Length: 235
Image 1 (cartoon, rainbow, N blue to C red):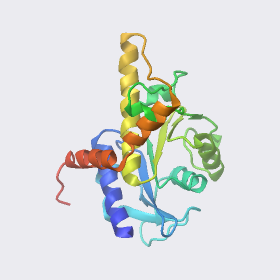
Image 2 (cartoon, rainbow, N blue to C red):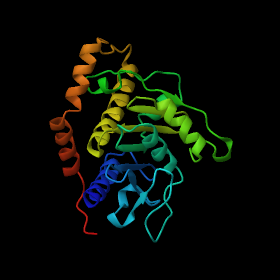
Image 3 (cartoon, helix red, strand yellow):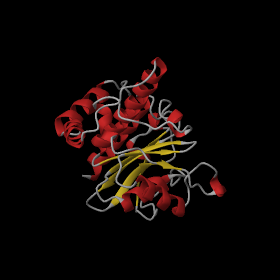
């Protein structure tokens, strides 16, 4: 399983970079359920991540690989969420341009299409940073507060910074992230035209739609599409 997860994590990095969700900065991780450890790249731009860059970390932050151990400063984001959410097996931290306006304003992100129904239960905001690292999340205490703010949601905004999105698998996390960014873009575009009609808030409709959007067939279909968009690489 570990080899498959590492390979898939490289693909996830490339997808997020190719879609412009994660550019030079940002990161994605996956949990190995067999060992309850996580895989995360060393500190490198996601577009260039290879299997040789993937490190294995414990949930306490110990790196189990030999060699270059310079992983991302904010690896605590991933570890804290995994500790708090046994249902989460993949985490994406990003600064997508269409999401940032909601992280720097009081405008609430709302579900505006069926894809956005994944976030109908709300998108909480985190702003309890420690001064030592500014608007970065680098300490264990910050990570704990951030994970508590995320709660049971699929996404959260980091004020003045970016966002975190999660999934029950790596493919699902990519699907959630893609639709999160898409919903933000749709809401921004709609509000530029005038008043937006938000989707119905019927609990049964929300639940049914979200289940459809995260069904295995839909998730696999999006993953295949996004994978096919990747440029060929000879490295």
